[in-house]
Amino acid sequence: MTSASSPSRSPTKNNNKEERPRFFDANTKSLCWAKADILIGRHPERWRKDAAGNIVCKRFCNCQGCLCFEYDHIIPFSKGGESTVENCQILQTRVNRYKSDNDKLDKSELEGFSCDIKFTDKELDVVEMAVYGDVIRPGNECRCRTVAEMLGQYKSKNRMAPCQLPYKQETTK
Image 1 (cartoon, rainbow, N blue to C red):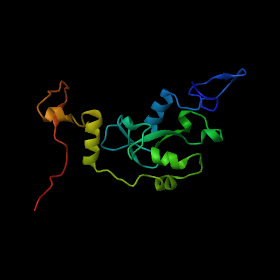
Image 2: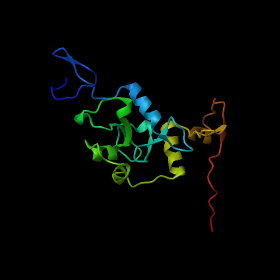
Image 3: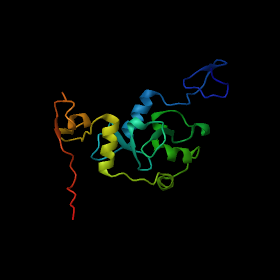
């Protein structure tokens, strides 16, 4: 049951007048993700950069955290912005919350709202392994082993051969 003040997730007719949709549909979200900046060296279906340059993970949509994001109306819905791909951008959740209904913010102002945590490649690999079960690097003819494969508990049927992650060797003194 919804209250009269709850926003509608789909177009409804009110007094023979169709209301504009408040939320982005699945196709618009897919196109919005596709137009966001690709994170070099990461799988583009899993990772992107938001409008402020923050790294976000596709599995972390609509949650809290530094790798989480939301689909944002560039021109806020409350100021007449439509739920179209042209008016859609991905933003780190924290940035979207601070942006609120502002529409005149430039990239540097959005960056100022960003989470202060910056992740290393190794940390992003750990996150990707935990979330997806593997790490895939585009352009490589290999994939990283899953935890179960490393423990000898599972043999993948994936045709790509497992490889080692390309980290620099850490030297100990």
